[in-house]
Length: 364
Image (cartoon, rainbow, N blue to C red):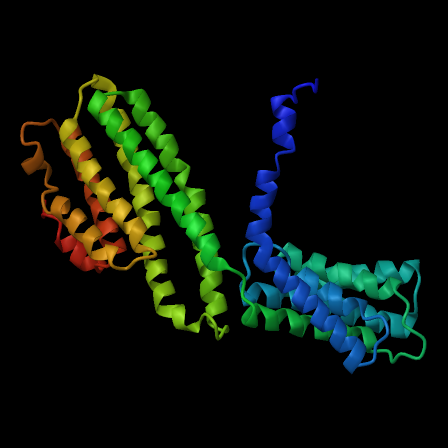
């Protein structure tokens, strides 16, 4: 009889997270394989270089598996590597190979790279390629600039595939959108429960959930900004520019909405000290939650945007603390007042201008 595998050990070897990583990296892997192979083949069959190591390594290193596939990032990495190759080639041609030449090459490369760019990765990329040039011997009969030309070929290949074979940022962005709106829904649900039960502990848990939304929105924004940057040069994504601009407006508005949720949660935790239930505010939050869900749908389906706008407007027009809770104390009225900026942000996310959204809220 086979012994049972301990839970922790089984989780460690669970293939599902690995398969998820593989799916997320499929576009990047395709890019790297195509670019590195094309660069290698060009150097071998067109330029006649017998061992174009740099053509492949520059391509692989500049593309990488990072989420940020913006052409500017690729160009910065490529530039750093070309700086390293150029400095190393100059030292090899004038001073030859050796340990002290390696030290001099690294010193000059790292110093130059730090002068040119504030990014540490720029300097490291330059240093690695300079070491390869200094250590790798030139093929017999090859001209001195062989390795530099191979590096240029790799750089061009990396930039070309960034435009012609863009990664699948839509799938990444879709995952990020789902994560953000699930977290928003979870936060509002926790906050609504706290208000209905007059529970400070539940309000504080809602505050923790609201704070956890920030990195999720950061990931969504990064994926979206990367897509926008690629769309500027990619013929396949150029037609999506307007749609991407609309999504950028949504992510900016939802970022502000998440911050306002933190303010609401802090205020709810403060007023919950008395243990009193606040069903009126809870009902308002539930209504805004329906608007938030429709905004999430509108990211992919623009037809949901007017529905979200009407849902939020129906609540926003009555967000006057004196009207909603005329007999309430100052603390409760301040709590209702904190819902007003949230409603404005949600209206902006649904397609309204910020001025029109503010005008929809009753004046105090």
